[in-house]
Image (cartoon, rainbow, N blue to C red; front, side, top):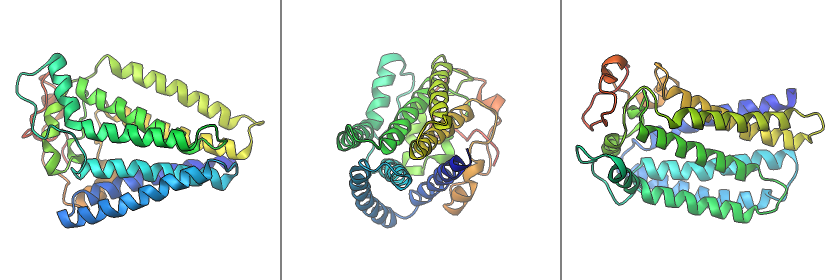
Length: 283
């Protein structure tokens, strides 16, 4: 058990710090963002090579390296999306009154290139690690992909906390694709399924007969899944979702000061969020 604590601590710190770092980078000047994206692209290529190399390694170092490489590959997608470089063919707010299938199609168009990019890199990672003993990197990337897709669907269907404060100004139009409501039918299903997978990962990690590197690998992937579950819970709980990254938002000038109350924001259960709507929480 003690051998798993460093893995859990590492995953939590990297999740917290890397999220804040991306929030800072995407709010820099356009020139600085271009430089950041260029550097991140180089790092992403190295990360894919690292995943290919570590896929054959079965030791602790291989597990940590594969985990780190997968996070670096994922960070490239986050950075290019939040910086506005790779989003989708639609870059304007959702028309008022649009609902149902047309609303879904237009929402998908807003993030289509981003989603196709994740799919392409995900397939590359699966291919270069196929039938190799070290699947930590693949598992990490897939957990991030599935849980982020689930979060996007929940934002589309409607949740209490939309975390608009994380969007830089050039992506403010995406708020119109969100819906604020207390709960949606998909949320408990997604949360329950992810918790079942988490239990399975924890059981393997804690099994005495499991090799040390395998236990650490499952702990790393499981911790990322647990953090994603926490992020899902924050979507519906009456809490300040930006508290953990206020340092990054303030550093980048993105921390809002005034907002409407949760109750007032939820008074219109099924209304999409407009791009000029004030944020959910007082900062």
